[in-house]
Length: 593
Image 1 (cartoon, rainbow, N blue to C red):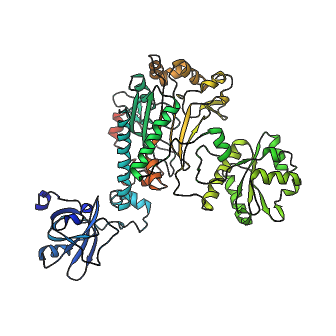
Image 2 (image 1 turned 45 degrees about the vertical axis):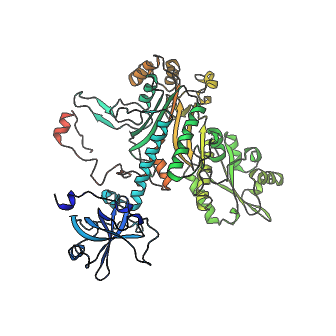
């Protein structure tokens, strides 16, 4: 072990201040930037806390200055030197250590480095594939270290808050039973039980309910979860959630606790005071007004119901839609009358993605409405349309006539696109909202059966229990999502704590008693042993970090993420394994033909 490997750091690079002037310090870190000013060599030495300027002056230490000429980017060095005040005119007010520099007396190269595949300056854009291949270098960049620091502080804030309000953090198994929760399980073969498999948990759902049965009435966990599903910008095969469950609470009490957590996080991380309680909107109203169950409230342009105004129109598209039980809805774009034909055509093509059959436009001008459809609308109907849509001269009304779900979803997507295209979204606003009263079930038309919209452990609204068997589509659930600026950051529900109601739900989604026993028998039995009323919620920790840091890709906030093909190109996973390992697990790989 060399001299500097034995020596303990007295400070970290980003911690030095004017208070250290005159002190001798020992620093260790990476060479960030290197500058030779003809005699003196200036280096920015970096560690996790930031960087400071160190100076190699031949008048102070010719030996150290000689070593300085050997240094290159990302070399690891140790130095001993004295902290000095920077000369007037050289102070850098943009960094915490900008008022001081360290004059080096001794220096040792602790390790050399190959030339990195990219510069660590945040200014220069880097190909994502290269960043992921060399993630251990990418994580050295100041921007990435800032994100990882925020992630840690958020996690700590969560733990501090829940400790304060009486929760226990309890771990649940990673190797568990495969149960249907909406996505494919990652399976783990059992060596000692040939032909049998564990599943990696999609969430700790069943175990946290069992903890309520066990009497631990306030549980949380920073839980690792796994889902084998198609990936996108805000989704990873393995992710982290803040998992929470409480006994003897109703929906209002649970919301109060969760709002307290969010308020605490924003205060700790951003020093922002969030106003509580958060507003609430039913699922039905959210879909009607915004075409989404995760509406972005940072701009207006709400969807307007126009069926009552246009149902008697002679316009064939409207007539056919009404005859088939559909709806007519629209949105008004302020100043949209200036849209070109091409822009309108592009928006029309966009709604096709969401299965809308077309987009009808009405420009409101000084001369009246301009639209291919206007000749089919009597004057009085035109006036009602303008009034109902809240339109004025210079605006455009976009209208979709289709089945209700398609009209809602396509207009909701169009609303968001217009909000981004027209720069209507105030990035500095923070809009939080609870979406409540979700449908308990949704119809799978392909398989001609009902499915649980959230999951089958959600409790039906007691006001709708009479419809449970005779008309499941009318049943609302005690299910809720928390939406932040158009992103779902949390979801949960009040659970079925009585085994008889749980069996009824299983029956409606097509599980026989035998199937329910096989898949969830331990839960059904546990509910028969005095299970308390309980409910919970889970926050996506990765998504929270995304929103707090203003980043739109989940890969930026996960230390070692997977690509969109669920691959880790840094360590080359998934990979082929040894035949002997497969034999021990009683697995045979069949090559695709």
